Image 1 (cartoon, rainbow, N blue to C red):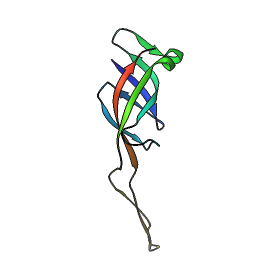
Image 2: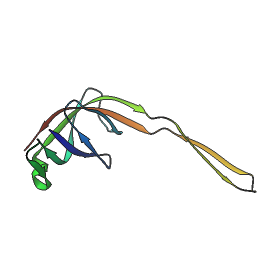
Image 3: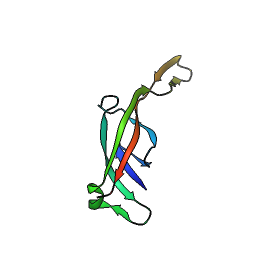
Image 4: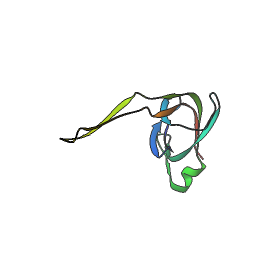
Length: 102
C-alpha cells in the first residue's frame, strides 16, 4: 500500500514507515500531521480525485533542521563585481505512521 501526498508544493510517494524530508512545517517535534492525499492504492484499487480526499495519511514529526549549505557566486566579467552568498534550506523530517483508504 502506498500513497502520493502533496506538501510544501511538492509531491512524495510514501509507504507506512517511510521517513522523508519536506519543506519546513509549523508543527512541534513528536506531533502528528495529516497530509493531503493526491493518489492512494492498496495494490488492487487506485483512489484518485474526490475519493482521495477521503483518504488519510498521518505522519509524525521526527525533527526540524537545515540542509547542506550551497554557495551562490555571481560576477560580472571585467567590472570587478563579485558577490558571494550562502543558503541552507530548512526542512522537516516526517515518518509516515498510517495510510487509510476512504
